[in-house]
Image (cartoon, rainbow, N blue to C red; front, side, top):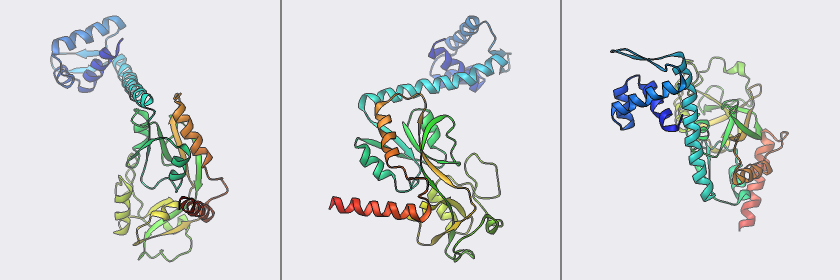
Length: 292
């Protein structure tokens, strides 16, 4: 089976209509039908059950569609990464302000060109999977790194992000029980919880400022907070772990060097909360002084 046959089959399987699939592929319908028939003969199975009114997938067709999508994604990913490898350019993807102040240090230590791709909530893993990015900064447990290799860089406690006029805004600390009656946002892919669906951090902060929701976020969020919002530590909330992730089968020397640079900049596990922020702030001041 070649990639053309697989691409043709996936188009028909997704459209469940030969005419629409042919239009999508930019070819005539007869050669598309012949290609699918030849594929079925070679595999010795029926992939599509056809009648004069409908096209449906057989069990074999369902299996090939599932695996075929993954194979086409892997092929496209390999092509993109091979092109970038030739230019020695890496793409790193992350959500805005999600690096806890480490990104500048990582890039300085790496020393070569890195293209940054800033994306919305939950978009890093798909970009990494399909080859549009070589590495990603992810936040556990919110992002799922199970498909990738990764190294931990920083563990942080959580804060509640609140409007400054909120009833809890003057507290020095909170527990999850204090937030039991508060409305939390809904993230892409999560089940409905009555809260607003949030696609990016700017939208989230606007909704918090309007009193439509509150947010539980890593402590380093405080570094980029709007003046009309405040952060209060939540002592029993889950921690947030910043990791650098990459495709498990990558053999790129440039990527390995980037991961090594990130690991060299990683914050020690005991340095959480105020200690982490103080150390990062001191390092930024020293770095700024040396540049002057």
